[in-house]
Image (tube, rainbow, N blue to C red; front, side, top):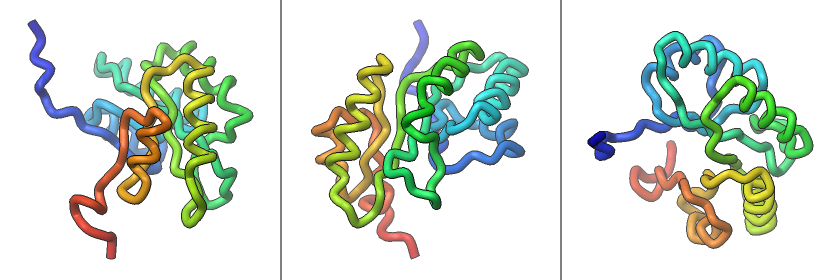
Length: 151
């Protein structure tokens, strides 16, 4: 029987193409896939070492220029491409716009995630994780509640 108590490492944040080789070796989950180029690079690297990474596609749900993530209108094409590559897609991830009530974005992500048939949803941070959970988030990021605000 496989021991599932092993710590699972999650890559959160922008993943540069030139760092994929290292990330695939280290992490079990990547929460920030947002392009075909990055998906292809991950597929190539995980095939080299015979490892399956669990993947979240990052959606730029607030259509913000300064944020990474795929436009929600282009998500179907990226999902299809990732499936062709045999990536282990498990859900979507988003970071809603700051200083705006995130509820409308969380609801949109919940609906999109359900429409695509994913079981997992990565959204919500220390300031809004209870609301994110209301909209079926299964992964939340609460670093500042544990470690304090960034300086």
